[in-house]
Length: 394
Image (cartoon, rainbow, N blue to C red; front, side, top):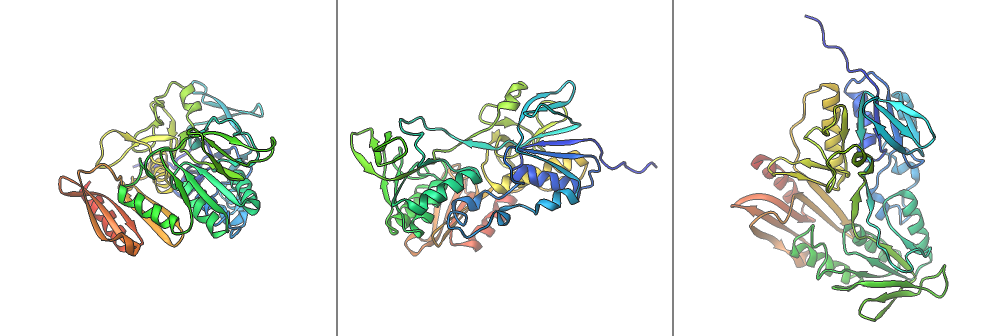
């Protein structure tokens, strides 16, 4: 019997974020012997994004602390980094990727891991220097500079990133107001009980909330200053820095140019395969199957990106697939840790365990009497038990 040949071929990964960086390392770990090239638009090797809204803003981390692995580790594993580069086009027929410097890469396995980009909010005054979005280290560096001089930060959007920045800003002594167009926080991603808890938590730290509110323009005394927000109802809110956090859109332009299904994210199977042979996609740019759920789902989370990287690496190298994971998420705000297992909002019944006013409780979501999701505040035991139970139910 002829022994199985180790996997060969050039693996090209477009996108050097959590998903792409992890995949490159796993391909080597799983025995891929062919060339691996990782193309990234930023100048840094793959780094962690969650700390950008927390420890990085507090100057509690150095750039090297953010890296997924030391830069030297890529050379040690013969992984070629093409940083500060963008893929401009993909030619599936010749299996070529054209880069913005005019060069081209031939691939045998191509992985699109382009992530997501902040949703742009078109506002008069949105080009002022004190207005930031938060996705990259450059964004975080700009926001960190603003927080060193600002007295009042306005956050447009009541999502997780905005709330984490609000927590950090209050620790730095900056006044914060959050403007949300809906009637509560986290309308699409958390239960009313969790939203109410987080609002109480932030209000207790002095954060002001403005619900059912829309911003008409960002105002200033000159083109480089910010004095406040002109609201759609005619009122004026004072601030001298603005963070816009109204969600993120999947970066699908390359996949779209290939004619792939990209409605709401690049459609992939459980191992990250697209509809084109030899082309995979993983991470925040994708819609993927989830065990126990019908259809395809787009998840913006590090655990999901890592799981997709593992499964794609297995598919490329011929390794046995791991068991599907229960989706999970987390958010740290002040001394409160929120951990979520499953997808809240998809059940027909909720059960509250514990007292929200104590700062330690869980909201359980059931479908037909079966646990399908859990939101746990400062309750790691409940969270771990829920993850196991949900996995057993899928």
